Image (tube, rainbow, N blue to C red):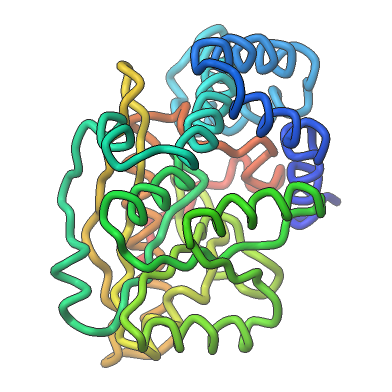
Length: 315
């Protein structure tokens, strides 16, 4: 039986995330005009849509859960759009690394429900929660370049050392710090130290890592999100802030903050963690339902044995 870890490794080592293609993309985007980069991305992702059948089938399988009333033809079109949007988001992120505040501001249509200053005034920092949805890397660039907030990104080390080095170098160029997830306790202590300095720590939480997991109801099915953000929020008093950076039809982006989540210290710890992460899962689900082509999961997200298993929302 395939495990979640096996599927995650297969995606991380796949066509988009190998060192050669990522390196060529990085250098090509830096030298080519944006329109040319987009055109090459469209062509490359059309080839991926046609030739990388495992990834395309996985996208269609996931989309079938999100938009169950769509026809197979509509699901195929959404899968191709997902590939293309992912490529264009990658182009825009790489181009943003050399952007000025003026040029960057032209890429942002607006911010909705901006809560950063309000929450930072509490003095406990912010745990910024996202999923593999929208242009999360561009969101980090925006916080640094347009807002000047100190930011640390927490994530799993890439399978490819070349890709890992590229991503770290790109963040370093904007003075965005990185923490690679290791032992859960060690990582948690590092994050708590940053929050005590009133910093923003960003994490993608819709894929669990090993035992760092809590079950949530996601599109009516059981999924495992990271547990540690809620645990750290409970220990530190830091709010969890859902945040999304979403491409619009005109090519600009809208930054959206969800409702802050405060982990309740007055109830049982495990219950408090489960409630907090379920609250985030529900907010993420709402965003994905509105724009399913912005959710970048190129492997079967739900285990085959759960494909027909619908569970009620957590209380």
